[in-house]
Image (cartoon, rainbow, N blue to C red; front, side):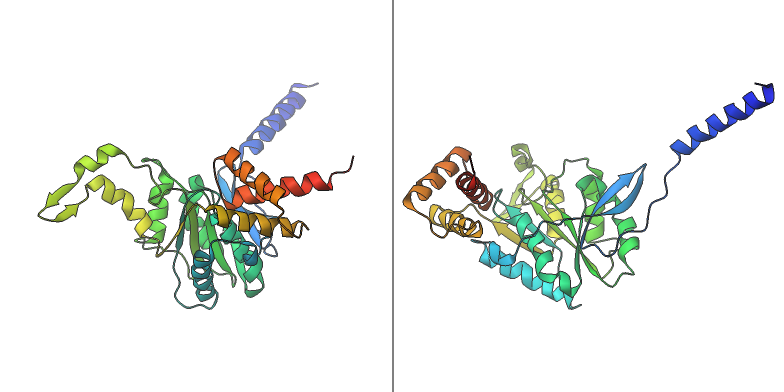
Length: 287
């Protein structure tokens, strides 16, 4: 090989290495999809279509009728283009917070509702997401599941600005629905109570507590979810068993469902669903 050929080969190898480091072109989003996840590729965000969104009906959700009615009404307002609020759903684990948001899609997709799930570390991309969705005719719920922040999380400030206070706010075809086990989305410590002051009969929280409350207050609508009592839990078990083709809850099933919940240390919709799947699967299993 001549020196010139060797130089060309080295140059081609160098070009290949440089091209591998350059950001790849991001394809146009699949706007025929009903749901997406926000993903990152070499530092660039893009919409990844969800091929098989989880199908849940609002009628499948038991024990949360008040919360369901409130969120459904707010969503109808949003779809009709009248004022509606961003929503924060908080409370006990497994009580249907995430399921309620997902069930909205199956109920209202034919009215233009779409769902975009964004992880908390990607909330800093909300301005970019807004630019991408602003001119679309669909109505988008930005879904932040199991949301909580530490003190220095960059997503905390990004979400706070997006909800209220930014010159470049979200477009009218977007709302944020977030779920969290924490009412104020951040850990709260006993020492923070020492900042509280008292003026006559008035209690004034310290600055640290005020800062933490400031984010959750920017959600216009709060829905709280609570642990189910035994009767509510068994009602949900019965509903999911019927979903799997089991017509009635026998005393044996009832006893097994309670033992299942006791083993999990929780009576929740999620635990009821898991029990029903296990019971139905066992009794449909062929040797």
